[in-house]
Image (cartoon, rainbow, N blue to C red):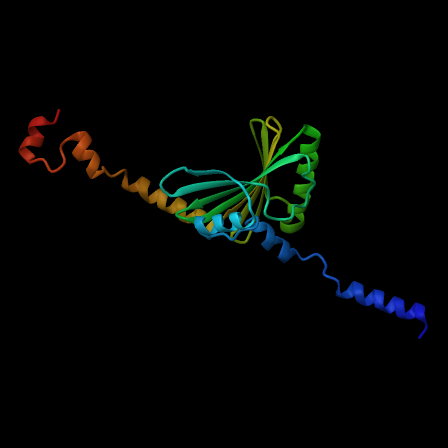
Length: 213
């Protein structure tokens, strides 16, 4: 076998064994943007600190919802973001990661349009054509669906903000079910409010009748 044929054989073998594009791998990597859905806020903060990232916000939106905003991204991005400010948002419900999103602030309209095209192309390669497109006021959204997830790309030209959000359906459905149950039951009065604000908690019935307006 001559040298040329040997080199050709080696090249073919290298191409055959080289790792190619893996849709399954890319979906798993992208899904929670470097985190796993369902992890606790404490675990997420451990990951953030292990990469020496700065936490920009750590807020409580309600009794069961907490949001963390971190500088930068935790995955390799399929787009040129050298001219964009990038943040990762993590939202927890009942101490479980429910939503994760990347927020890009572009320098100008041209950069934002290019970023939108690159992100849209990447998401379509993973999840197929978007299942919905909606325009609300001055921004536009595209939605993709995957097992246990919905993926939303939002473009807001007015603020030059582009957002990719991954939403984990099981936890979102749990949250909606619990909110629906609370709405059906109505808001229960707090004993502390009754005692210290209303001044009638545990008050004898005849006194209640006498002092109620």
